[in-house]
Image (cartoon, rainbow, N blue to C red; front, side, top):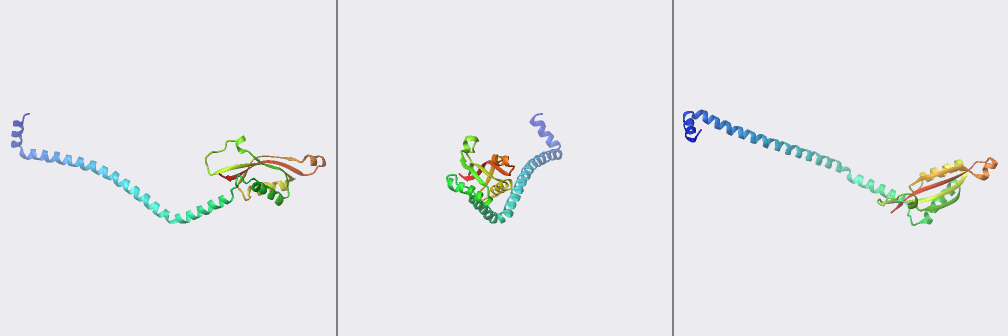
Length: 189
């Protein structure tokens, strides 16, 4: 079909040709609008999600000051319960106070190099401080010593321990218990 034939066809059927042109233009506009609509809809969904997140942040921000004060108080409490790894005399005094409070007899208490037996984490705000503790006393008093150590002033955990009857008391049938512990106190870095 050449241009002259097309021109004669348009002159012969002007209404039909005009309808086809209008239909093509409307189809193009519909496709364009549909593509724009999907983009606007996704943009709207993103904006709504962002608005909901911001509204949630605003509603949760009401308690931020209270939560900050609670965290600062908890941090202060934790800091007060940490030992200073360089204060060996004060740290040993803690075990002697437990000895006096519980009525057991400390046979040996000395610091242990924690890096010799286990890997120590290089990162973190706390350093473990290990002690080897040997004590003697009645079974009930050694358990009281352990309980006081667990719930004491400093954060501590028992790494290893062994318990046996005292050699001198075995012959007599007595009840003294000898306990050897490896205790780790939580210290400042």
